[in-house]
Length: 90
Image 1 (cartoon, rainbow, N blue to C red):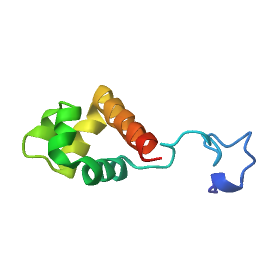
Image 2 (image 1 turned 45 degrees about the horizontal axis):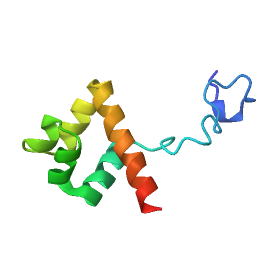
Image 3 (image 1 turned 30 degrees about the vertical axis):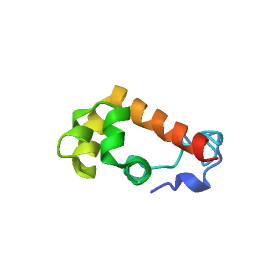
Image 4 (image 1 turned 60 degrees about the horizontal axis):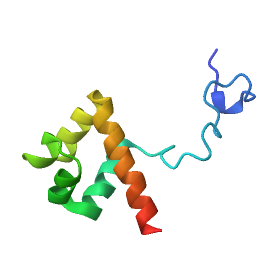
């Protein structure tokens, strides 16, 4: 028997759909965040704002994703810059 969590009442659902309604990062994938940052700032400015080697030396989405998924402090900085970018564009 398989369960579909979308149809189970929320008190039994470990991940309800309205899990984080006020979190602007909820539902966004890291690759989407990174692509939007690169489109907005470019690799050079992104490397200046967040000094991470994957941004400054031969940058690519794939290499940055690999690094950011393994390194929580770097991911937090990228997510913070993304939130700042969203705030500045409003």
